[in-house]
Image (cartoon, rainbow, N blue to C red; front, side, top):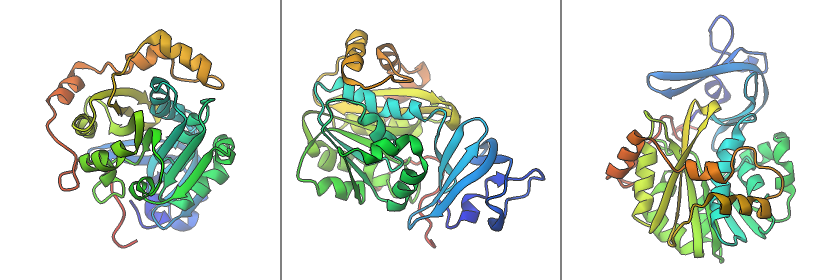
Length: 333
């Protein structure tokens, strides 16, 4: 993470390839560039910077990009893009809600931009959604500037609390049918690392699920060259829950595939027709990405990643974590 707009926006370049200075952040630039790995960068064309702010925890920027529409950055790292965020958010939310026999209550860890709540609230029978994000300023920024999520933010079923997800979940008196982890990737020094640990899953997540409850978390990049965190999270969850499914989807704006891990203590039945029926019966409107066939097929990963998952021995703990590329909270913020 970065300690100022200047560092958060140093990935924007003008035509002569010099870095965009802080006092010109609202001028039209040409490219957004993000360091995906030490030896790999990803860039796309930018029309302009729409909005920028700084919270206690991070820098927040909304770009207008040529290919992906509006793009939300936190500390210079792409979080979601208007043209394809539905891939990530539908994949995160709907499989868990559809595989549950009758979900009524949902707890979202993170999710400050509101898209996970939006997808959750498409389910007609949902009675209560609690969204817990540590950064009030991110939530307010997204509430103000992401028009597609305003209905969700105004829905009376949505209850927002501002806290660390562990403290927020522990502080609730009730249990939940579904718990969703819409968290930042684990990064060295990052604020979410403890929310991927075996102890957190055992001591907090599992006790807070109702009988037949389902837990799902985003699990980092899941490409053929980028799945080390994904396989570790999968293995860690497997040591806590009896039944675990991992699945993936390619998200163009991330220039990679994303992975999710879904878990519970009762058998999971993946039936295409049953899932399609539940979509028709339960979900308001049309899903853009998922149907029964794709949900089932997304659980089939390629041979290389499958071998990594089956042979993985690493357990995610606070003492022995595995990190995605990037930086966490700066020490001098």
